Image (cartoon, rainbow, N blue to C red; front, side, top):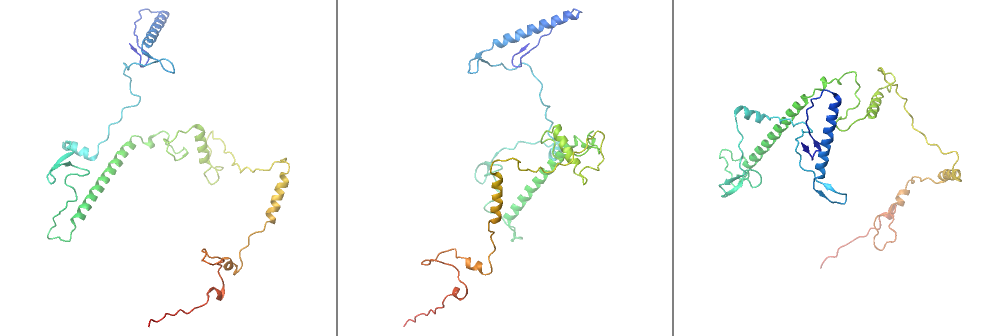
Amino acid sequence: MIDLHHLVVTKSSSSSSSSEVADLRNVRALAVSATQDLVAGLFGLPVERSNDGPIAALPPPTTALPRAKPCPAPKAETKWEAFAKSKGIVKRKKSRMAWDDDNQQFAPTWGYMRRGDDDPPIIEVDENDLDADPRAERAQAKKARVEKNERQRVANERRLGDKKKKKFNCSSSPLASDDLIPVDVENPKRKKRGRDAVDAALATASKSTASLGNFDAKRDGEKPLKPPRGKKRAFEPLVGAKGADLERSLAVVHDIAQPRAKPPKKGQQERMDTHDFEPPNAGDARRKKGRAAVGKLKKITKKRST
């Protein structure tokens, strides 16, 4: 049998000879024959010309291969599904559209423009409770239903999540031992660690004690910790460019000789303050001190109408 899609040839043959040499010759002859059949089948396929050269399209596969990954696990039942199964309740498919007697037309049973909307134009009020607001009660009841559904959904997810976690118990793992040092607390599924990363994390955890790991108990075969490295200082070269020493000396002298800004003395800040606007016909709008800042008082009188 030849499967050109997977490039596989299957041939069976029985050998009646008892010598190994005859068996090897028979196997070699079968391999040569199978290879010839495979190559002949490939060259018999229709060929298309392209810029990359001749291309032959392989036919569909004839051999069923197993899955690369295991089959998915069955979905766990919710509390309602388990209850319905125990009581024999069969879920019936609900129609999307239904007849609306009020509007005399088909309307959706849920969603936008659904039949029997929650906000009817007229709502009857009980005579014994005239102060009640039926619209507010409907809204509150709907909000309570939504919150209940959300709580049930979260509870189902939490319950199903606990079942998934019980499949693998960390305490039963051979790696869960008190003698091991916790390297880090990151999720191991986020990234793949190599040997160098594990060694670096172990060294970091070993130095996380008060004595930086110097007085901690050592295990058999554990390498001694390297002393911490200090910050590497950068020194100027002994032999530099021409005039480099002169430029550094001049920069130091310039920094020393440069006058420093001093804070203003008492009353000097008021003299330096200016207005943010410029009034018309005013060349300078500086703020003045003392009596001049108030200006002259003028009496404004109103003329009486006669």
